Image 1: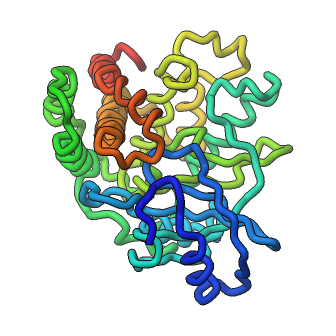
Image 2 (image 1 turned 90 degrees about the horizontal axis):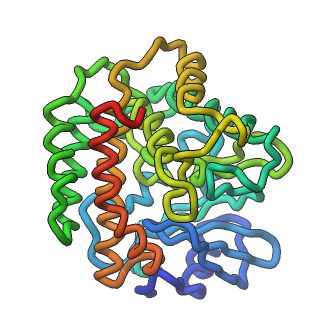
Length: 345
């Protein structure tokens, strides 16, 4: 049994997969990916094939967090849909094998863009990548959840009300110091919530370009990754999540587009991305869109506060990056208030 987020017990994995994954043969070499703060993810190389293993971190965890079994289920359900995902191979729910639940999936060769500026691409190709991202997002929200067996994947009722309650509790459980902006943001999100318009779809929960794998030679999405926060909810939360990310400063930490001349850089504006999404879904203008962006800032504040707390407790997947992210907790909360006041979008 392994209790580290940085390594896994290779012998235990080989023994388990030899029995439960047809065609699997060791020996096995594992390398931890340095991306992803929540569920540690490993590249597994055998003489004949590569795989990806994603595990729940060991140790004391917040209730309902790190649900790798839900990640496995939703990606398996989407296998034949218009939403590209990696093939799911096997889910191990026995904590005794390596110390926590894990699943194994297909390894896809492709491009990961960690920065929405898309600096590795020539300018004429950047809009095409953003358009591919937009198309997959619209397709995701048009998945027939009954047909793919996900009608029970999230509870009924008002998605935003449910999420605000959940993440408020998660934030309080991980709180390390009082932040006035976050207290105000939580209060206002409850008080200013728009009426539920009845939309109910599969949502990713953390939809952004660095959670997507692209084709090496084409402006095409090969797989949407990191489904930990997925549920049945309101599609505007995913759309606003994209826009929220772009409000952050450019660079390795903020990974946003704030202050850039997007036309000069060959990038879509927020308005273009939203309009294109609405056209694909046959929607009109989205009223009070700043509320949804504020909600995303609030939720991200809760997430990175949890990551920061795990760093302090010694069980973060990437401790140094986790501490750096923790310094941005007040900034995210403050930007949420700006979005509520219509000063960002």
